[in-house]
Length: 540
Image (cartoon, rainbow, N blue to C red):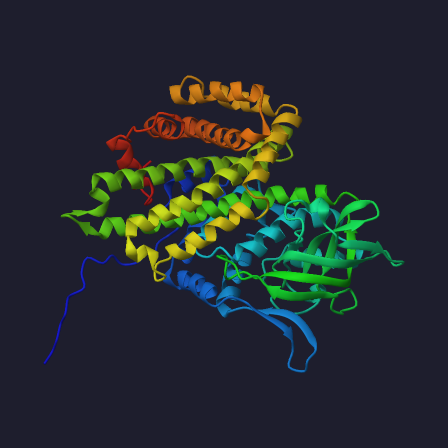
């Protein structure tokens, strides 16, 4: 007897084989507006390739097959290597081929290259986030190394600026592409790097010997790390290669890999230095300042990465809602769900406008005003976007229901990825302290903000009211209010961009949604229609 218990129907197909760039109207507009329109054709090609089912499967495989620590080889010799699934290497090849690790640092880099690189980074984040860790650290370290690469490693700059990914366990001079990691955090210190106990002593040949440990040593397979250690002159920054100039392995011992909530594809390790060799970057006692040069860049990438994950979550939710039938209608046409999805889309509209305005500031960092703009808003963006990502992906899960909570969906992996960007490179409180520091100690920061808000004054009463409140709060700012100040600074920054560039109905609904403390107001039906259309690649 043949038994048929049920027929499967009304189950939406997964989102694959879409163009991640062309389907994002806000991103396409931002690229044109912020000076990287010349990259649109390549971005469309990258978006098409990354949106394929094959690319998405690579992201899944790299996470369900996490890296493995190889402490010894078959003969018992110390190896201290990490083995990755082939999917990891394919993803890394794509990132390096697309110059996500160095596009802005080429000697002949075009105007807008920082912005173009930011878009490429965001597109890759929608497929797999763990591979972005070595990319962002290499990107942040390269301008510092261009200025002060130690003499024994002068030939490294060519492979650092190449478009090749080379995973071979070889000295850097023998490789076609290089990656740089960081080693700052110790067991007793966390964000308080001044409490580091790793010590460095200078040798007769000009190098230094490091003894100590790192509690988080990111991407241990990197060709070199920038490491903080205590010298006689204070906390200093050292270039610590995996292989020494003579081809011998450096005395860096991998103790274990971290078992993390998310970011499973990426290796994070604990290490010990047993008279490891390093070379001083900058001056003794100048380590914090050297690392902070990189920190601002990695913090921007944290915000970009979280935004990319949020964008993917919305895309998955929208694709599901357009297919799923509920009570006789498509889910996207149910009034309450339509409001939820449109608000999510509006949140991303604001983030996109602001993050790429911030990319433009980095593009023009030689200008003192633009550099101040980046200095003020980068920690605010990291704080606000990375915090917002966690509930945002949870909301996307609710759109799919139980299916979205199961591992066959992308959303559980996106959800687990979200907290790392809030924690890495300084948690939320550290970002807020940085914002307070800029507002109090950087001449012109408040004047710059005033000019930003003055340009859009009178266009929206909620924005004007929020700006007046913020000015009052700045008269007597306290550290305890740091989060509220940073959040309000972020909202004013985003609101200014929306009022400047978005259509008036969308900009005003954004201000009402984000700045009206009374709450309760709904988006207009026309704005909902426009937002949902733009979120799938149509509209203005």
